[in-house]
Length: 166
Image 1 (cartoon, one colour):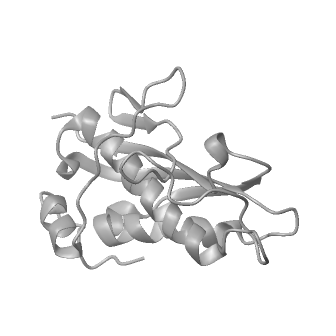
Image 2: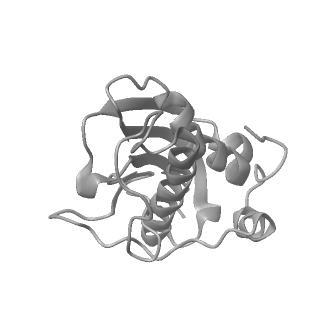
């Protein structure tokens, strides 16, 4: 993870611009839940799918072989899902400059039964958070292989984020 940049308070919007990243609109829930909930200094996101302009760019199981989503593609999708999660966080706190720390990332990978590279796929989310937040982006993490995800998404990412009170 990158730690030299994005670690100073008040620099996240500038860092996003430097990286050429624009936060997407908050993804609409696909069931009965809200995208994020804040309680005190913590924000929990619901699982975020890698929607791009309201649609999944790729569906299916992750693995090696014909008819499967390549791990490198799934890694990019995890990055997109993390951006969607950050949009949900921002909807609760206004500016991402208020992020004190990314506490936890949970990543789910819809996996072919023989695929064991879930940690590498979820690195797409973890690396992005490090690029954006520097030291504040270093987090605990789980990367879990599952049989299927909503809408046949290859990945889903959720965050727990500590934020400044004011």
